[in-house]
Image (cartoon, rainbow, N blue to C red):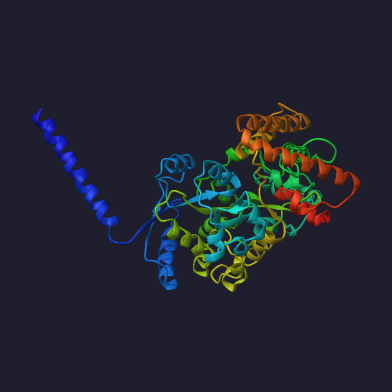
Length: 490
């Protein structure tokens, strides 16, 4: 018993010493801001740059520290509702994090602070505005921005006597060039080892036919019926290109490659080796490509069914509403819009910088150590401005469920469990059932839902008669841009 008591006492002493040491570290007189983010090596430089930027601007002295253990969304929510969330937290706009966090009430409204400190939506890509706001209020600002394209390994085409693809192309040209490539590259081989691309972007392909998962007011999923067959066409093409034309690999064919996984997985290494002539990704892939060695790189848009488009998203930062240092945390969001931070992103290749002004710099367009990338950078920045659209998110249904159902539909078609028509109809039905269930469980949504339903009736009537639509009637970011580009807005 004596030894047990001694052991407990020893543990308590060690714990006390540890607590004292921690308190000593955090009570140096400077307030400490905790940034909940991933464990990226670039964060060390970004912290140092923040400290020097704060000093240069004459802002209050403070210390920025990383919290990489709590980036998981569930941890962020649990800690935040318990009153111990990080001062600044990363979130992913494409996954619907911001809508979830807004519903939980854990984000600080930074609308007025953003105007005062210079990180309002005008300081980033215009197409991101819908992702920065909930209910008209700004809650986040980008850490970096991703707009996807096909990276092209030009050497893979030249090796087989083929010309790399053009910047803009339609579905038919993609299929024709894809067939040419796989026929030339796999000639004489026992099994297929070369493919045009690792996959197609299903959402962009659907949208290229003038369709989206939701209607204009985000009140219903609309993926069937006359003029709404974009996703069905994407499912048909995906199956054909995998099973008939072999332009893109099946899951089994991907697994058959014996390749070590790195950042980006085996896909990037297969792209480097030329097994995939193209890979669908964002500019961040350059971090890995630069480690492989020199490639003759280019970038092209996704093939389209009539309307070129791509998806834009952001890893962004929010200010925790229950934080002890909210005023200091808002300076961090201002820092994300600064030249100091943006040039960090420009130089390390981690996607696009938050502020598009810095994509016009010589350092961005022509990085001196990587002349093999010079054809790429301007295209990523230009597409982020010209053809990019955020993922559609309805306030009346959980975003992850929506895109989960869409991927289920893709898998059902590939496994021959459903026809494309059956799969799309089932997907649409499930999404609309989720909306109805959500309205029953959350009656506070019903008044706004009913208002939007009435607007949808007006939009449908205007479309039938050919009248132009007032822009403020449309909530869906895809339809906002599509209608504008088609000349259908007042």
